[in-house]
Length: 278
Image (cartoon, rainbow, N blue to C red; front, side, top):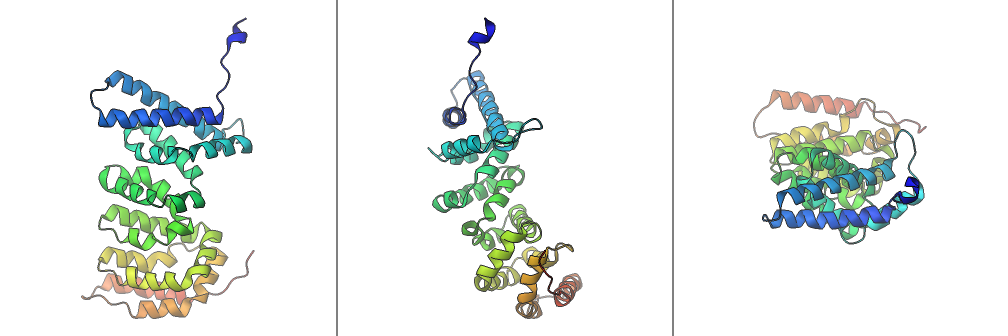
């Protein structure tokens, strides 16, 4: 008889709808401090549970692979009613495990068409970098996922120049990862956008007034000795342009370390040879 009264498993839309309601409550609990602390903690625990369920649907586990239909239902529901936005803005209020789950859920859900309609979310992420002590850890993964999309990648040069060093360093780390790991994305992106890309690379990075930014910029293209073939071919195609930019790069004061780095990068780029694609 006991089995007759077992609760039915929640559907993906059910999980997201509860997540949405709990996010609204979490936001209210921050803006209305007189809400009972015990009630707030209870709701946040429920929210963490919903996020774990969402992550399980999107990623599967050791016993089961993700189901495409369930992933599609979850994604569709998340894009309704500002749920994804609410999850990003509520990150600081979640437990450590809840933050990790939320970051993984957000990273899997981000899509180009959604970002194009909600490009201001990048400002929310950057604000998170600046205002929360653990901002780089919390928002870095989502930032990297978002910047893989062309609509966001075009704003990369703005983010890498931010005065907050942690943000600039994370943006540079993001770009290194793109250049060395997301090979098809970067090769296609650089090929389609090489004119504005290399113009901005020069004017906004190599000529930046920020010394750290300039040091990072000259190393971006040689960050990984095992660069994929299609990335190497893009660099070879733009070799002369890159070498001219580096040759014109001067500091106001002599810096032997900077010049040594630059000489190494010039040597690396000059020695690149085209490769056959696998």
